[in-house]
Image (cartoon, rainbow over all chains, first blue to last red; front, side, top):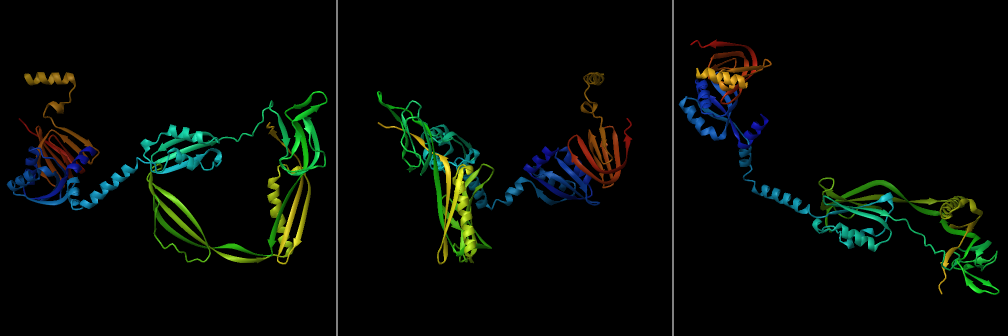
Length: 394
Length: 92
């Protein structure tokens, strides 16, 4: 029945009211001629309402005349009437087709590149490399050869363990796995020196292979040779080896900071101004004036690409600009407060640099008071094993 | 004679009777819907009373809010609150 109704809707039908005294005769004649009628309803003694197909209307009019009935059209329903109604709106139809065409056309391009890094490890400049390899915003999807791009990017960079490109709708999803950085390993068979990688004072030196170049108590700076990769024998002469050994040194981590007693601090007032704009490729349209009414403000710009479905991006994006007002608040510290703040800041920073907290031997804090600020020097003394291998170049 | 033979064949093939003959088939769904197959025409149609002629006789339906929902060449659907219906046989 539903199918019948849909077909009727497509072809269109009329609801008519027949008025007369010989309505039964009228119905029977129509039935004999195989005209479809449905939803027949008696309105009152001499009126019935019924639905008929459009194509039979003329014939039905003739029958009505024969049976001395009057016909009144109550409603016209169906697609033909609907189309007729919108016949005058040619421009609307034109634009509808145009928009559909543009959407269809634009679905062949890549409009968004999404980079997903495994484990959240950011890889720098990967976007530029991918674009250089050929995956650019606005290229035809058919022109993109993912295999070739992957090969190009992998050739270009050596910090990528795996790369995969997936084209989904107008969205290109690039998945990356960052490779672990390999430490530079000097081959066991190659001759090398041990050189210092930190400044400090040697406290212990123990050369297993090679000749110690420094003594306990010596001050070394970065790049100084600690253990030479050669051995000298009385009879054999100089023989080169792969230097091995352990060097421990006292290393100082120093940091200084000047804390003024009077500081201006940002404090957000909570007033927010939001502007919207539309960006098509690089052409931007702002909906409101660009100048903010605030005196001091931070600008935060977020760009959202418009997408029709989850992966169907359009080359249009909405730019939301938020101005957050802040006021400048003057703060005065006493000397003690400034000292405390400064020391805490420096300690946090230094302790993040030191690998082993247990090896801290000594902590030294010096403060120098000035007229309107305080200088703070903090020094950590740490016992560390130093030294890295360096190949001997002949 | 020939008719009888056809009838026998159809009975063997289990074809429904209303398909090959003029016998009307009346189905009642609930008390609100009635489908009459193999009808001839409508004799009277009021909101409370419908008379339908078939090849075997007349069917009169009493009720209220009676509508002729669909009318096709061989069946008619009457909806509404049906209270009673009766038949008038045509006697040969």
